[in-house]
Length: 180
Length: 121
Length: 138
Image (tube, rainbow over all chains, first blue to last red; front, side):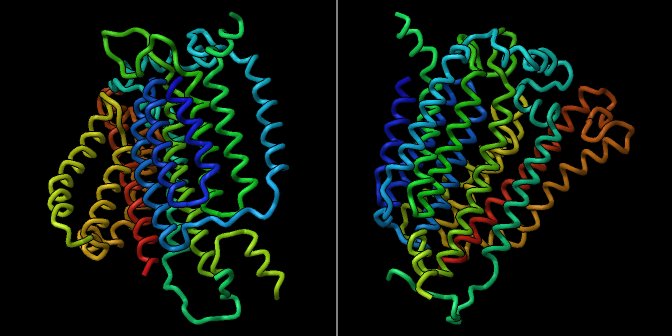
């Protein structure tokens, strides 16, 4: 609970900060906190990934982009009232919905009675793999993971296509400098 | 007493909703594209929390089978979110690549300034 | 910063440990937390760390961008190829049971191979993306 409250506090910080450098560093802290929350929620594999990906790779990528662009966000021109209203209305509707959800941590909710017991009972016998997350990831739901790998492949190819070419330096009509 | 019960039972859900809504707010209200991507990241992490919360069983252990334990948390959300995180960073990289190209083309990453530059012509 | 002795020596001590830990996470994924996704990200983080400390050119000598770009499709190929092998041996696509005499052992080998494919794609993609962003800066 303390960790979750800290997460909310950092989110408020991210909203209010106008220095993008600070926002990115706060994002790293946020990822580490999220990884701690995941450990508390028993998702150790996910926590490991979140700590390596969220706090490591994406922070480095964001800092690289800030190095290429600028680090200060300009003041928003529009009044934030309409987005605030939309956000609060959505949030209120969702909170109203939570009262029908099963409370936290029970074992006999529909989520935990569907296919998960099958995986937990049969993983060791059918695949000799003790880590159920691994066996479900690669074996029971291998097709799913193949799709995810293909998505990563596609995203990587797209980034290579966008950024690999040599930068054109001739100042054409489309190349404008605004706001400097 | 009832209120206290509701708070304990749904605190995770409420924080999830708060994170989701603030991500939405950042994406809608801020014009800076890097900030928008951070907001999308917030939205995304809130979904991780939404998936992992119902899989937790009080008194359970992480789903690594061992003869010493009998209660395990639900492994299925872990699998889904594990792949979602890595896919998330790949798509984040794609968004950042687009931001870099926009900055090279227009010299700014603020939405308003790009629109203003379009109207000047 | 590239001439800073402390960073260079510290990095030299840390890098082999990081690589070893990535491999441990990869191959111990059957019995503890870990697997292809985590190990791929960690090994990519190792290359990125090396590039930050020793400079992009040095890192590209150790780990050429060409290799990273080959790794991106190669991992998907390994993953899909394991599925096709299962199909050729008379089972459904992505069923690893016929890879060994015993179906359970076949599943275990299949999981190891597939995780290796995931490792190759993830680490290749992350390093290629990082090289792209850093190569843009100058």
